[in-house]
Length: 102
Image 1 (spheres, rainbow, N blue to C red):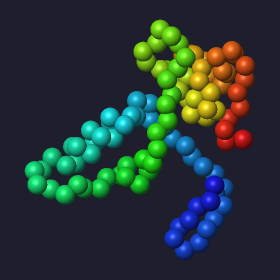
Image 2 (cartoon, helix red, strand yellow):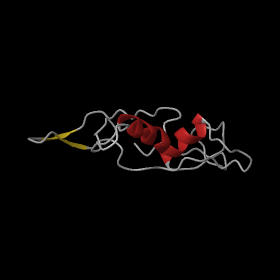
Image 3 (cartoon, rainbow, N blue to C red):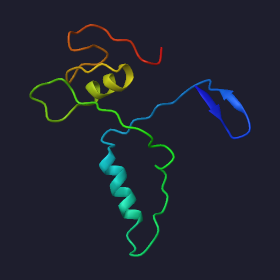
Image 4 (cartoon, one colour):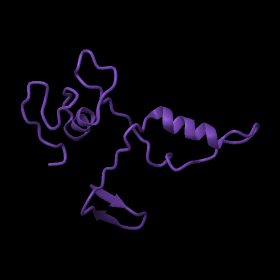
């Protein structure tokens, strides 16, 4: 990962990827609406504007599940492979999947 501070380019030594359980587009949208309650205002910037640049689908492969648990969503984010709820680091066939960060 290349980091550009505006003056110099640096190779990142470490990357910290933080995921808030339950953090969704609707939470960020609700926060933006909370900031912009005054009528006739211009949109205020918030802490998410610089960081929310994409979305990822992390639903599990459980046919009965309406909610994805943290194990399945973390596996999807870290590896790109969908899996079942309660399964971490394995695909739906229970074969190990490597992290995309390797």
